[in-house]
Length: 168
Image (cartoon, rainbow, N blue to C red):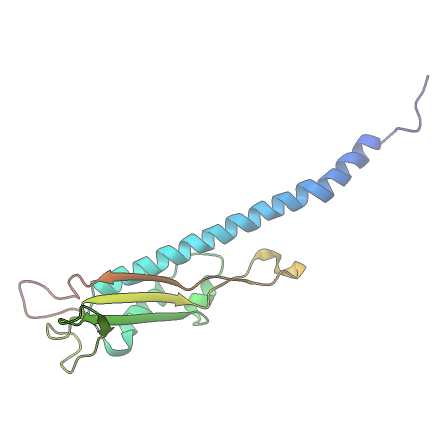
């Protein structure tokens, strides 16, 4: 006895399951993995920027730290946002008030890279970072990331213990 009405049914069932279930799940997994990669890279990037700021000289406007961060942006999906300046890199130095213990924004009248101008703490923030996935052609909007920040106490501020010179 010959079955002529069921020929190719398994192929059609596979095509329907693949198109409606397996392909979307695979794309969702790739999208989520890329999102988490970008998230982790942004967190690590702010930490690296804070480490750099804590071990290098204070400059008004923090040009040395921002320049270093733009040059050393991590190789993530949306690296161009950091390098081109779409993402705001905020570097703020603080000094500790001796009476109250509160942190106030640091300022110095002396030369910018000297022992007289060493703040107590630095905070580095990554503001307005968006995850723009490879699936944006499907109409998915970019995913706004939170403002990542890291605060660290100043370590050497680029000053050597042996000499009076500080290196930027």
